[in-house]
Length: 293
Ligand code: GLU
Image 1 (cartoon, protein in one colour):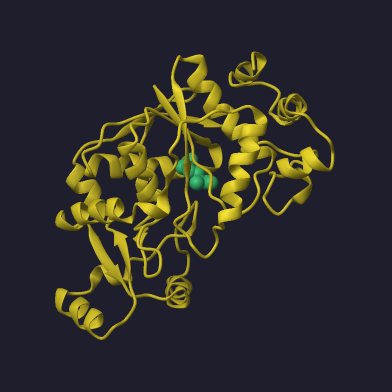
Image 2: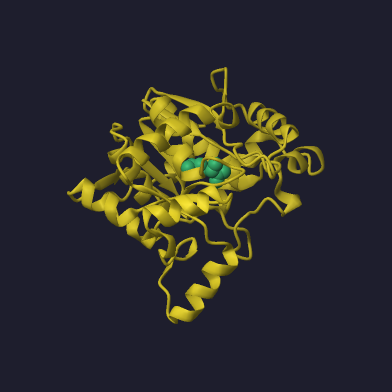
């Protein structure tokens, strides 16, 4: 079995990442499997090479091992384009020319717009454009994003899709909670949702581990797997670490980066495990993982 830890190099890793990495590593180790590391660096504007080095440095310090070479998403845009092409051939993508401002205005006019985990759901304005209108706008050089027509995708799937989480059991996939998500845009020709689904498939990941904050994404990834004819992994979503005030550890919180815990607070990897142990919710089967680190 294969798990993966897939951080984005947009800052130094913090305590929450250490938990996520250990969670993935220990899930693999406790099942006689392996964990791979993947760098999710498609967003060139936010990712920096020194943070990739920081990830290697921090994980090695924690005692976590991973095979090389490490897959950097920024080197694999051809794979994501191929997946987009499959969806396009199934008539499941449409170009969206709306700016953020236009979407906002449209939503305000509509009154009570449905909201999903990523904010207000796209009202589908460009889904209604005719082929001629699309061609004309593209020919005029208007920038556009490619959106998944989630309604059409669900009709094509034609069956109820489910996914299995180690701790939650079987769940019905409800990708409609996200609406017609953007799968590619000008500047970044592949989105998080697309790249993760393609990579987990190409890399043969059988247990996808990630934080509960991304539970909503799993619903969509399950649909994409079906549309792209991929085999279906299992998932294990872990609870997020909360600080003493009940807030999530975030990258902007400098005091909890692994670098400063190591270099300024003089913490050892064992003390990091203890910090994770005490910041986790008091009850839960995943606590057991940390017992025999
Ligand atoms: N790269 C994502 C992040 O840093 C996580 C990827 C995933 O687990 O799906 O939040």
